[in-house]
Length: 439
Image (cartoon, rainbow, N blue to C red):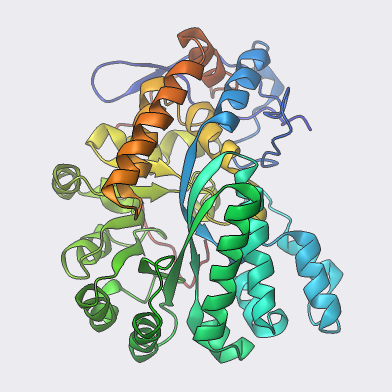
């Protein structure tokens, strides 16, 4: 597959927080020289022919992609249901008498220039398709097996027990046992370490959230180190779930939270950190809207698990400005520690390799940036300090030994087309959009 010409920010920093753009080039398939599938068009806009001036250095991009596929990775932000293979979804629907038809399934795996989000798929799984604990085992093994092919060596992934218990009729103990068994099977067969994060469904009640944490506490397991929270944030702020998080922390569980994802106020991120007491933040993009708070997060060393393919910004930013104005581009400049993840890989049509490649190709980050992202992921992972030290030494040694030459990074960053002229704005303020939205 060859990408249409797309606008990708490249160039050099001007020293005042802005980036001067370079001449335009055209982009081609990242999988050149690799089997890595890439999104059809998760990046910027298709440029007109008269904007594109030269041919992309596709060999450099292919070399970088091969390196990034071999790169040892931690995945800290992936939803189990968002990793479901299309053939698995079809199998589950066939077994249930096709409550979700083939055309609807095809639509789930179609991601246009303005994607509508994936929450409808996640709801359909609980409501119509997941009926046995073994279904969760299958999803777990398949997700971890797929991640391992991209040298993801450690993966923490989300699952929403409330919907599974309420809609699928599978009790928490049975569901967790099936997922944990899948983690063990994947470790044996694929050499990947998996950890489960039961996540509060914020569209359910605070009482349901507290009940979920009670289930986790009652069935403690080493492979289930903490909790998270996800689903629609626009009208479900984090302070609704203080009691659930208070119980989790009192019980020794780690904690994270989706916050600042849908253009919601930066104060949601502050509440998650200061009131819920989370260890890290998932998304957190609107932190860039309040520099003083961003400095506070930087000083505290908070890690933000970011998602290059996040649907909200693909939907709300003009295509030609997407890669230029996306908050991910600005976050490290404010001192924020970020780490790239796939979120919903099969539905976003992105692999771990693709997510890391986008950090260079679309956002212009370089070798030292990506090396720091490796460290950020390990520092944010819910592992013991001894394991963290060993992996940091090993993974950075592999990074340093295998990293391409500096010119490869520069050429790979220039592998997409750039909109003509001008400078990138110093700030990228995020605003919410009306009504429920999905990631």
